[in-house]
Length: 282
Ligand SMILES: [Zn+2]
Image 1: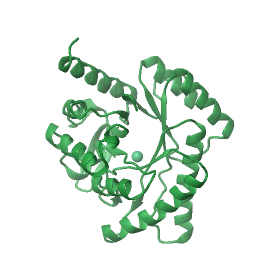
Image 2 (image 1 turned 120 degrees about the vertical axis):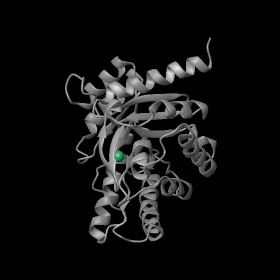
Image 3 (image 1 turned 90 degrees about the vertical axis):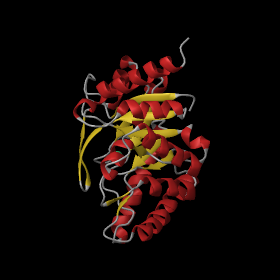
């Protein structure tokens, strides 16, 4: 990645229609740089559509990523559920590759009251099977387990970084809203910087040059995430977040998942450009 792109999780609300192509057109019109395809309720896109999506995204210079279905649990109790979970990741990666997307993200597992270290081994084993299969198919999309928002979900920052270190082709999706909701912390310049340093220490500088971040306002309670909010309605300190991103020279994609996704994506992009300009006036 040569620079940092901002965009929306899903088709912008102001797009002319709800199709992926309408979404890409609107993201380009707004002057944003990326969009995440939401396959959260299932992968229903066909090959023809995917190829048309790839062509349009390339023409409009919009970088694409994709979100896999929610119903994934690599710590499932039955072989059937486990296999279905692996298939959902595979299907997402295959259609994403046809769309020309660079990454897919997914919520890896639930603890199911198991010890986190034990769950980690299950997730690692089952995800490695997925990445070997994709490698055999020549699929080069980055597979990104997401930092999750609820305490019952596998996916602390540490777990996601560890998986990225342990499995080839795996990289983190760092959801800063989730991490804030889950910990009640990580909402200041020093804490955002600390998280970015953790990424660099664990995975090297290249991880900060090829980052994938989710962000939004968020409501949370003692078990973590309740729902996503607009920045204006939430406590997320997005200016400090942007300052930390700039100081660590982060490159890659930042996907905004607020209800008014394009408005907040633009707010983040404007804040980024304004602070960058103050720091390096020309
Ligand atoms: Zn997600």
